[in-house]
Length: 266
Image 1 (cartoon, rainbow, N blue to C red):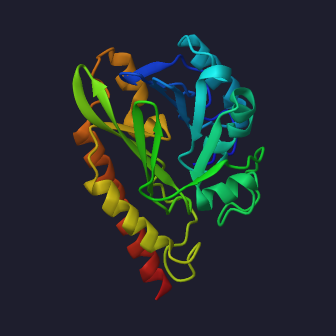
Image 2 (image 1 turned 180 degrees about the horizontal axis):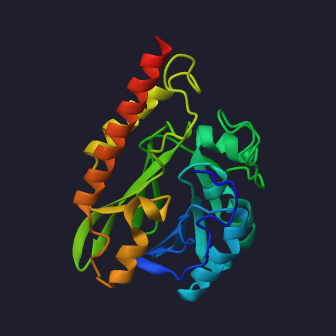
C-alpha cells in the first residue's frame, strides 16, 4: 500500500534467508526477494526509489555482485513502495524487467494515472523489457517461477509461486502481491475501475486454493517476517496455516466491505 511518507516501513535491515537460496533483501516492511539460480539471480520488487541502495547493499552483503549476477527483475505490483526503485535497480544491474501488462503500463508512466491514486505517488518511470501473462513461467537456470495475475489492489497485481527447499524438504513458496482494499476503493455502484469487485473475487479463489507452504508477501507485516526471522529457526517461514488464515480473514473482510458498499449503493 502506498505510504504518504517514504520512510514508512523503509528502515534498513540486514538480509535474512526465508528458504534455501531465497533471501529477504528489502527494508523493514517493503519487500524485495533475492532468488539464487545456477545461472544468476532473480529479484522480486524494488521498494521505493530510496530503497534501491539498501537492496543493492543487502545483495552485496550476501556475497553477490548485483551488476554481474542479477539477471531478471520481477514485480508484485506497480505502486510506489514496490516499483519506485526498479528504474535504479535496472540501471545498476542491467537486468531484464518483466511485469504484467496492466502494471507495466503504470510502471512506464512512473505510477501516474493510477485508477485510484491518480498522480499522487509518482516515481522514476521504467519501461519493462517484457510482459508477463497469467500462468506464465519465468525460468532462469534451475529455478522456475510461475506468475498468477491476481488483480484488485492493482489491475495487474501479480502473485508469484515457485518450489523451494527448507531444511531438506521440498516446499511451495507463494509471494503475495497484495490483497488490500485501500480506503476509498469503490467496490459497488460506480466501481474504482469496472470489474474491480469481480477481480478481487477471482483473485481470492486462487489465493484460498493455492499451495502455500512458505508464505511471503510484498509487506513484512502481512506474514510476520520480523518475528519469524528473529526466531532463528531454519523453517520459521514454513507456515501453511498462517497463509490460509491470512487469506480467509482477508476474504471475510473483503466480503464485509463489499456488502457494506452494496447496501449503501441501493
